[in-house]
Amino acid sequence: MTLVRSRYLLLSGQTYLDPGGKETRFAYSARQAAFIAMSPATASALASGRVAELDAAETERLSGLKALVPAAEDELAAVLAAYRSGSDEPSGRGFTIMPTSYCNMACDYCGQEHVKSPVNQARVDRIAARVEAAFADPATERVNVTWFGGEPLLALRVIRELSARFTAASAATGKPYTARMATNGSLLTARLLAELHHEWKLMAVDITIDGPEATHDQRRIKRNGIGSFHRTVAVLGEVVRDQLAPRLNIGIRVNVDTGNQDTIADLLTDLTCFGLASPQVELHLMPVHSWGNDVSAVELEARRYAKQEMEWIRLAQPLGLTIKLLPSATKRTTCQATTVYGEIIDSAGQIYSCSEHPLVPGARDTGIVARVTDLAGSAARPRGAFDDWYDQVGDGKQQCGRCPLLPVCGGSCPKLWREDHLPCPSMKFNWDDRVDLAAQRLGYRPAGTG
Ligand code: SF4
Ligand code: SF4
Image (cartoon, rainbow, N blue to C red):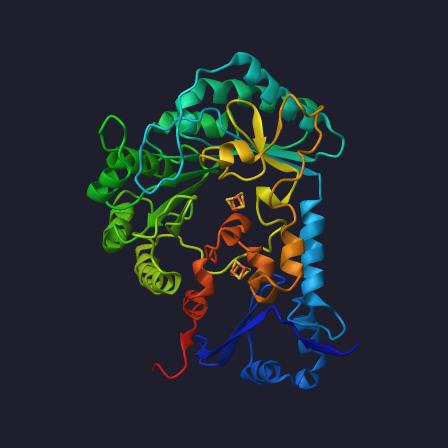
């Protein structure tokens, strides 16, 4: 069988020296999400397409990592087939539940519209019954719930009630249940986080911190005018320091735009001072993007953002803050909007395929794919606006169909593509710098640097 270099192999041009002084090159196989060290001779053979020159052991190693693939393989078709099969796989059911549509913050870059509505017990029961039916479905092997809002902790009573039913269903069926939460953090206490983790299976929490105290409290303003930075990071610091929720992954999301870009370096130092330089905490720097609202006045151009981001990543590294450099896994499906086994249920029991639809004016009505009352038992949701995403990528017109990062990116956000916004993650634009840092984390240094 003739083998060729995979179109999803990203080969770095830089030569490195290992601690013993041996020359090494690096490549990344996106089909396996594998960072690969190799000799300069192997790298040169891959770069020039002379793969027949590689010895048998190296050929076997590289084909195992899908750095080399059969010449006859249509790799784009294979990658899309894997995505389709992952998206059609019913064993993992994902529910994003919005226990409330209200938020106690009013951030100026947020395109959501928050409305207060009283808790309706009949609706809560119907949402619970839908998730319980998914547990009971023989095709289901595991269930994950994401608590989302508005600010989900404004409806803590509903979260506790539903969590009790889901953990009971998990115990009754023997199927694993995990939860995650996207929260603004302002209502968290260390005790509550420990309760959510130990009793209610919260395994990941994503909290947005937009800068050091003055910046965060000005951008993420609570409706009562009181800042939340100090309290939020102090709670997280306590949880990490005292190991109150030891298996909880804490993600800190930083939305970056022209308004706070100059404060990110200070934020990194502050997070370190609060004890958040820990493997338990991962930082996600994200350029502000449109939720359908106009953010063009504050949005950073993608390449400019990516260049600046590398400066922050380089600052974060010696501080011990965790920022992922390269993807460590391929994606099963792009997002909830590309699998009918993922859905968003709002507090009124309306089901959406895309998490950006329920709170955005217009899409709130047009994006409804069903109501919990419409669907029998555990039936998958009807297809939504983006369930044809892989057909679009496959037809050759979509940029993602030509991108070497497709297996680990999935196209990022079909909604943003459709709205003519570029959703590519920053790694697309600062890949070589990321590889450079990844090599250095492994103890390599660029050749020629003495
Ligand atoms: S299409 Fe975009 S906004 Fe919608 S769920 Fe997917 S990633 Fe999120
Ligand atoms: S979104 Fe951008 S980085 Fe991701 S696959 Fe598409 S073109 Fe590539």
